[in-house]
Image 1 (cartoon, rainbow over the protein chains, first blue to last red):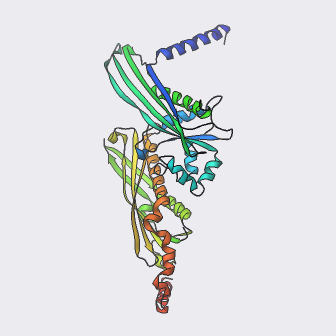
Image 2 (image 1 turned 45 degrees about the vertical axis):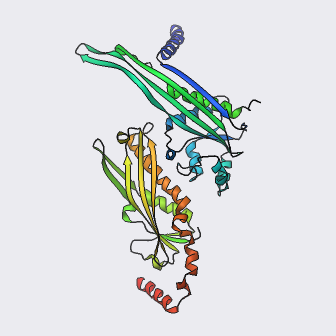
Image 3 (image 1 turned 90 degrees about the vertical axis):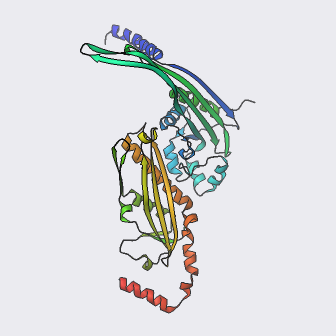
Length: 228
Length: 185
């Protein structure tokens, strides 16, 4: 690699970044929290992120739960996250979709069951975060036609669609056996697909924005003391 | 539970296969293999003081059991994303748990509906369906741990057996049982 090549790398990175920024649709997001109790987390304490049961009609995508798990545990100040399957297996059968407590009221009875409190303590789980909600396509329109011939092909037209990502997280504190509060993320994104010979997708990363926003807010919610 | 139970797995339970043509003429074949047998053996081993697997030709009445359990599969159903217009695969397994006391009388006939759902977005279709079936079996196991005793009364069979009038009887009856046992041997 020559010095001239090295000089081109930042330009390429900048161009790639610029294209990525231009190639995204329009996203608006609102992340809110409602605190009900004090929070805080010690060195040896962990959290587990679960999807609310599909027996209750919840449709939260596995990919979204995994995204929040990754985002909340990543980087400096990341929280230690126990993989949900490991937690569910260790506590079998009390966190299966049918048997998991739906409200904090059920926690007291659950902790009294033989072995439950011990297995939770072994994993150092201080908070269970229950996610519910999903991402849905709520609107769309436009039209596009493509054709191909011996001399080549191309598309012409314009299409758009709007996705809404609406997620809610309930934070259960296993120390006080109470609901510490909720964090919600409501993100709306419109993607565009204009085509003048070549289609140029401008994709709004709605679910990804909802994941990042919710994870950041959850981390701040758990770590920080409430303002008085 | 402080009881000694015998369990007999019918052939179609030991090796269960379901074949169906779903919407869109897709052929699906779900082979649960020995997974039900393995699951129930593990589960009962965890739930009861002692578990004996009873062969097809064995007479449970001669084994000195407190209770005899015969699980079976009544129905297996599934849905694929084409049918539900979602990205989910779902599986329903309807089990039936028949429980007999030491005298051979049926004391419970419990239908147990288990459900599992998985998303195809992260897994391929075949893997997602397999995952949904595994989740349905876990659901059945969770239900049994939580409700089997309440629904069937199997946990009380030892106590009932101890106080049953037949245990206070007659030499003659005891002799008859011994005779059966000898005949079987």
